[in-house]
Image (cartoon, rainbow, N blue to C red):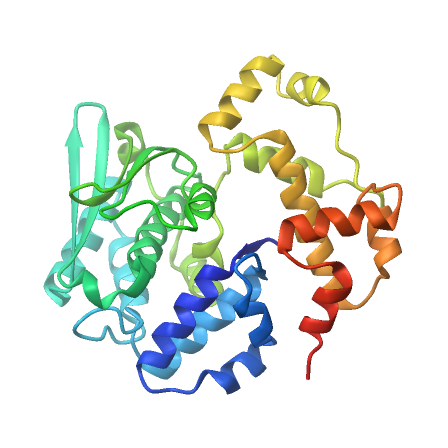
Length: 336
């Protein structure tokens, strides 16, 4: 199970609390300990983020999660998707989706612009000050990128992303969400990508949409469709191994498996804002957290599964990743 920065859990809970609701019961139902929230280095499972978003949508009856002046009734995104999916190209789907929201709300304005061989999809919040920490602006941009990718059945590779505020503390997590060049302190929030995607036809039907919306926002937080980033390819290759012990191949052999040189692969990963070492650490961290949370393996077993020669080496690495030793993490996670 992939994990995400604790920043997102805090932001969702802040949306919940701003509406006057108590977060204590929600935390208990989601299986999240408040001590985890207090640690800036903590990670949280994607399934728990999905639970928090779904519960907040339902309790607030607001798909904008209290981050705009006026609420957006729960079910509007589903209605927009059903309406726009009937068109014959991604361009028409996005245009109709934008038109739908333009008729419905003034709180979020969207625009699709074509400049030569590049498309710019921009969003503008009428009152961005209502979106504390810019959480929903990032989430809304992510939703539309993921939705567009799902419509055509392949991930839309981004050229650049623009943020109308300074680089935040969770900027590395933004690199995972938007693996491309990042620009901060810009005039408008937008993503850019190749115009070639716009002519592709939707491959989804209304039956697919029912399943997509049932799992939402899981398929919006993750990346539906064909994944072509090298970071994701490497993650998939390492996580789909059949052996019990995690094996991370030599970088030269890894590059060779993609029919490129090691220098080329290193450069491509750098463009995506990551490295092979970072990817390996992220996978080890996510596997370790997943196994610790399940209480199915001892610390010594987890160390062995992740390829550490001894538990002490694993403990040092885990503390570097999360700010806690495995034993400390277990105490926090199982608190109460």
